[in-house]
Length: 197
Image 1 (cartoon, rainbow, N blue to C red):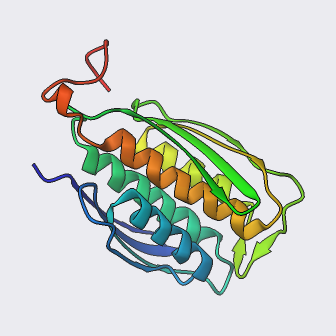
Image 2: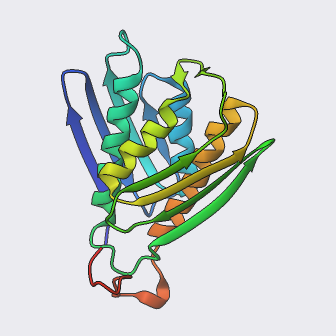
């Protein structure tokens, strides 16, 4: 059964198209107009082995906030759609990823209950190109709200802002991959004692 999500989201500020195949090979086609964000979404697809298409046309003449936020909302909605009924998946996933001096630890529960815990080093450089580093938490908040997952992201240390953000996306990709993969020992079983996710 295909596990594909497709979301189009249009407002006065942005027009977003996201397509995701959870059982892909990591092929990506990303264009948001924010170079570093494109790089992070590419990491998400490649390390999650998700085929991911993201096309965003946003009001970048103002700043990148709406473009980044609305893309994350559409990504979360597409991920939720692709998960379907969640029967037979592992549900939980975690991954720790180093990137030179930085380290990210990500744990996810595809619980149906949105919740985010996020910590990263203080006094990080405010910008990476046109990417405001305070947006990383907002991306995760937006994704969690629409995907309806519980997500814990912890960066205990790091110095370089590029590394700090990138290792979060790589670890997120792997944690989502592990959680959403089909468990061969649980075919046809919903991984919940409540009978609902």
